[in-house]
Length: 135
Image (tube, rainbow, N blue to C red; front, side, top):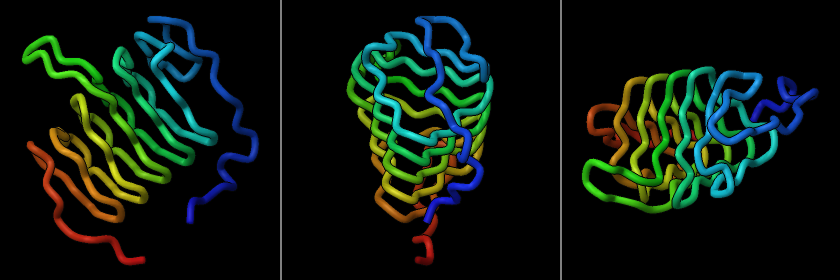
């Protein structure tokens, strides 16, 4: 279960297209972003939501992460979905058309190219499931 105490005073952040929030993260194509309650997005993160980014409640994203729903390098595009209570380690990159499962953890400095199931720990370049999480 998510630790909700740290979110007692959580407020939905003001998001202005292409400008840092008060927490120093940036969204491009903000109309494509769906942000759940009591999320924690670290400083210096970049989110490109052109083809949709869904961040469910209680998701934690470490600093310096990049989330792309479109890639200009290989023309990939598609929604990125971070399910409830998943955690993304700092300096990780999530590419288009990827879902991170509920309660899953992505280790720092990972490159996520494919979907990750619920309740796993994954990391690496490219990220791979290392093991299931204990309930």
